[in-house]
Length: 347
Length: 292
Image 1 (cartoon, rainbow over the protein chains, first blue to last red):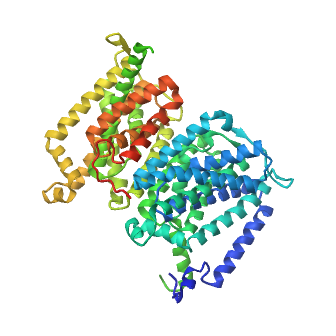
Image 2 (cartoon, rainbow over the protein chains, first blue to last red; image 1 turned 30 degrees about the vertical axis):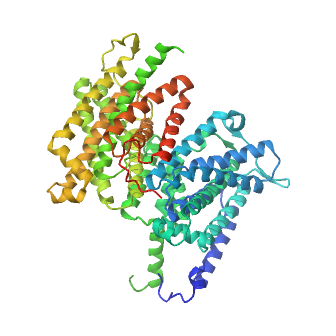
Image 3 (tube, rainbow over the protein chains, first blue to last red; image 1 turned 180 degrees about the horizontal axis):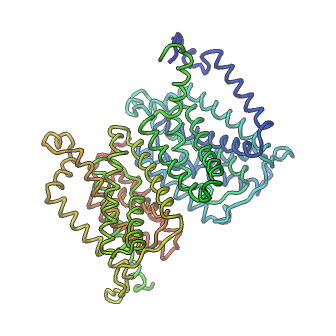
């Protein structure tokens, strides 16, 4: 909470921007995002696209786990539904990418509702295990329904296209992925200014009191599942367009855990946290890769240790953040901001 | 239908199920005492199995010395994990604690790859090789003797929890923590012991399973099957873990033999899904799970 920030109306409380400084910084951020692809080399462009996809999926999971309090281990499965939908549609139809992505999101949302149905009866860890079961079944379908999914070999698809314009390079994909990521995060931000979003938060904080307040638990929980899987489906669709191949192994269980970790490391129930977490977790392997490359001249064995080190760092981050900084990177970010806005006074 | 084949497959499945029951028991002990769902149990098993590999293979100890040492190592690991990473999470939301165990699993996989490499390995054979016949039916000796060793530990555990002071302390803590405290039971120590004993059961099962099927850093995925076992049986029911362990082991093996290996997981998870919808607390669990 900033000093001199007393809210005097509900509009002010719901407003996205509390000061003009924020607007200016956000404009600068958008400008930087727009200029980035022209300045960056191929590698950074590739990373930018990956971060964009991760941001969409993490935001989706954040809606479900961070804001509604329903833990899900099925995120990779929902992304897979989106990825396969896009792959199948681009092979079998001529539809442009906005439509295939929309279908990817909608189909994933439908599957999400199906997997979320046990939330009618169970919650907490039992729900996590139900979603785990869902992702096992989805993986099975991806691998075995060969006429549609191509079996273990998966599907290869053509680049995304829109009225004759094809997006075959990372540079062009960037202009699909990043604007979509910005839009979807803003969309999520707006959801939490409406009754629906507040209902999600009420369910997270105490489901029984939420029900007494007149919130239909089943309906809103399924809505949260649908919304979250929609995000996952779109992210999965972008994933398919980006790599132009989907296989059952593209969406392993470890990917679900990756996104859960991104939400935790970033900060549960905080959209900024989701963004920071997604970027951080995506960039860690790359940073480690760079470190390994730098160390190889001195320790020729360094590359062998990279993948196990990654597992260890990944686990240590989850454990460390949960024990020492449960509010995640977003809290660190706020602390830094507070420091500068209060400077030269302390706290 | 070939009844002999079905009998042999079932027998192998039941023996495998015995080992699942043992792992499930380890899982349930930890859950009963501390209310922690331990996603890292598969990785603790893996760690113990790799220790056995080092002791029996690399250091050329007798397997009968290496086995207790490896199991001891696994249980010490469980105790250390509880002290260092689970205790600070006391009172946090169950979801956060589960995520910590997932993080621990990831750390253990990385450590194992770092120390022992990522390639699959075979454990030195230490169980008798003479084929076992029960009536007409053949049973692979590794599985048969693995089952016998596992069953022996299982019986020791059941007797221990029934009759010893430590076992009573554990059951008291599980049924009412505050009352246990006021009766002078050192609940912290019970928590730690639960992790040690749970990991011990899992470690022994880990070495035995690895002896039949080989060992690789992906070995911990067996934890998923165990998760099915304990949910189906009821998270806080030892009897449930035993029965569900045998049943899930049988179902997995039969589904694998008749439908193909890719059907093993979906078959057991289908049972899991049905149980979650009909009896979320499991077949034998306490009916206290919050429902919405």
